[in-house]
Image (cartoon, rainbow, N blue to C red; front, side):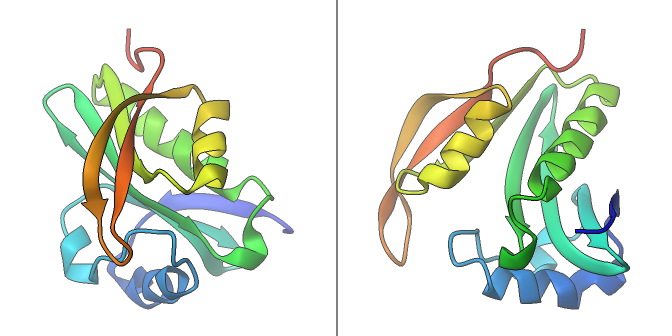
Length: 146
């Protein structure tokens, strides 16, 4: 990766997000309409979108809805930069807790989040489909905003 930049999502990013989603079977597969109106960020490398993150805020909580990085861009700090941008946004919005769901079998994602201060706090039985699988609920171990 030459130089990765993080910026807010634009409507013109829909095609790139769909491409990355197709390359990321472990990610949630929503339609682009499902993300409308939600805070979102994309990671660009040399002008090409290589990752995205969507979140939602309700009251003082933020939920990370989907984070995906194209396979060739993984292990280069792209996911961490996207997550940092979302957490900074949450802090500005006075969010005090952040949570997400992850497939129980997705060890790589679980380790990624654990390295960034998240811990398993619960389970949602049969949350995922195709294949059916439990979700682990992970929450950020510390409050985001003071």
